[in-house]
Amino acid sequence: MPNAGFTRRDWLHQAGGGFGTLALNAWLQRETFAQSSRPELNGGLHHPAKVKRVIQLFMNGGASPMDLFDYKPELIRLHGQMLGPKEKPEGFTAPAGAVMKSPFEFQQHGETGRWVSSLFPHQAQVVDDLAFLMAMASKTNVHGPASYMQNTGFILPGFPCLGAWISYALGSLADNLPTFVVLPDPRGLPYNQKGNFSAGFLPARHQGTVVDAARQPPIPDLFADPQAYPFATGEADRATIELLQTINRQHARQRPDDTRLEARIAAGELAAKMQLSAPEAFDLTRETQETQAAYGLDQPETADYGRRCLLARRLIERGTRFVQVWSGPQGAANNWDNHGSIPRELPPIAKSVDQPIAALVRDLKARGLFSDTLLIWTTEFGRTPFAQGGDGRDHNRGTFVTWLAGAGIQAGATHGKSDDLGYETAEGKTMCYDLHATILHLLGIDHEKLTFRNAGIDRRLTDVHGHVIEEILA
Image (cartoon, rainbow, N blue to C red; front, side, top):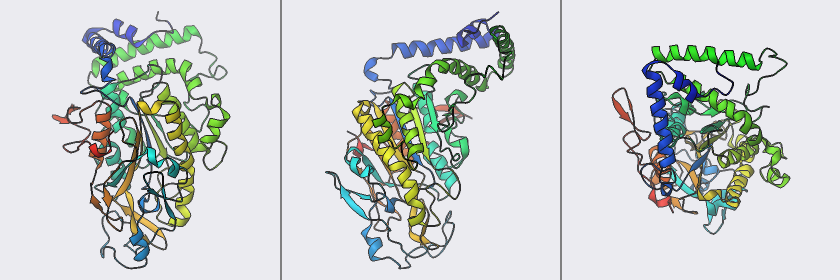
């Protein structure tokens, strides 16, 4: 009879037929490779890596660049003039209105003199640590395809996201926490739901592990309720494992190309290990009161996003390789999709993230984590310089802002610029392909060599595009 410590290795040893032998050999080869990797590569596949782990902050809905980081004096001069397209472009939800200046004041900050809106007073204090891509662009003005593109490199569903590719390429840094964790907004998932965190055609085990940091416990059913399940004794557990072993062997023999079984076995093993690691990792009360206050956990406006930023730091500190922290659910409210009113809708969502993000930058620096951690702030597209309705802004694929900070990044660097209205890129245009190529490069991966054969095609995260943005690298 198998015992409660029955592992995937035990299962594979006992699994009948060629599946068990092949799976065991492949797994042992991966373990051997991981143990024998040259330390100077720092986990890199193709060249020495500067980054071990990544935190991505995703502003869901299309954060308005000319109201946050992209100061445009021409919008003031041309305010009220009808200069927009005469016909409604694809993805616009209404015809373009008059040019609209930003309702928020801008000031220059830091030694770099970076222009930052009054909506981001805390991030304004750390701009010298950030490198800005001021001319990001997308292929679409529609949320779903644009969100897919920024996460997977394609505007259609079914492709692996950045986190899944990183998990597939580099594997785990720790065996007791997920490799790829997603911390969504507790008010709801973003556009495309879990499609943004999908492993696509990669093995299923590389998909994101979604954690609801607002609920207690954050990961449901990690521990059985002894009162709800009094029959779950040691003997019952052993019998259950034995039955699952038999069922899984049969399933595997019939479906050798289905990776979901491997993912389920791996998830079960990880869940057992997380019963020991997760309570400590997710317990934010272990942080000092000063740290909790710095992230804004003592304020209702910032407590949620601050909690998730702090949790992201704790997870990467303990071995999670990629953490994605989302701001805003899908839909018409409580996100960055400010069609109705920029003056009314943008300030509360901006306030909810500003202090936590600045605290995360400072915390990573103070703990020495900037030496091997990459921090990214991005969104799926920008907003129009033309008013929608009264004082809202419509979708705009033409230009938006992304910033990066941490390992391998030249602090204070700027690449690209938008045109005078902030409607299209003017210099140094970058796409998701270039951003992804740069992230992979910092992780020690050549984006052209990281491939997975699917339906007869050697697929890449960057498709047939992409170049490393050397201008922002240290």
